Length: 249
Ligand code: SF4
Ligand code: FES
View (cartoon, rainbow, N blue to C red):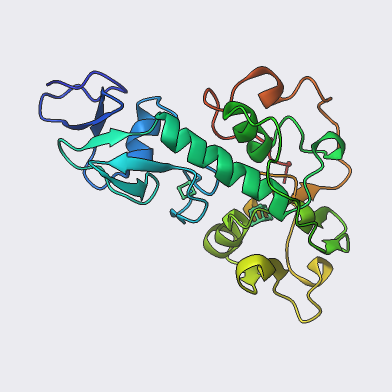
C-alpha cells in the first residue's frame, strides 16, 4: 500500500505495521526512527535522535514478529509486524521505570529538572503511582566543582547520553561509566575525577543532553517556574525530547 505519513508517499516506500498501523521507513532506519518520523511514540530513555543507539534502558522493547527486541537498535524490515502498546509490554516498562527510581535517589519535588525530566515524564506516561520496589538508597557523590555545571549522580540513570555527546559531538570524552551492575557509576575523566579539572564547557552538548537532573547548568535553576514546564502540560508521547534551551555561546 502507498504510505501516507510524513511525506513518504511513494508507492515504492517500504512499510511495516506497528500496533496495526502502517509505518513507512527508509532502508537502514530503526523501528524507533521510523515510528518517530510517523509521529508514533515508543517509550524510551537512552535513545536520542541525534546520537547512536545505545540499547541499554530496554524501555523501548517491542514485540517483533514474536520475539522481543529494542525498537531503538532493531532495523525496520518490509512487512514486519511490531507490537508496542500491549498491556504486557507496558507492564514491563512500568517495572523497568520503577527499578530506575529505586536504583538511584530521585527526589522529584526538590529537583530543578522536575517538569522537564524524561524519567519523571515516562513514569507519568506509564501511570506509575509508587516505586513499588524497596529503595536501594545508594551512596552517590555529587560533583559541584565545575563553575557552571553541576553533576548530581543521585539522579543518573546511566543512559550514557552525556558520554556519547562528549565523545562524539564535543570531541572531549569528559564522561564514562565505571564499575558494573549496581556499582556502575558515571565517572569523570580527569586525573582528580572532578568535573572542574576537565575541559567541559557549559556550551558543550554533553552539558545539556541529560534526560534527568543529573547534569544541570548552575544559576539557571527555576528560570522556567514549576508548573510552566514542558511535561507539566504535555504527555511525553506528544513531545518525546525535552527542548532544553541551549545556552548562548
Ligand atoms: Fe544519562 Fe544524565 Fe547519567 Fe549522563 S548524567 S548517563 S546523560 S542520566
Ligand atoms: Fe531503546 Fe533505551 S531507548 S533501549
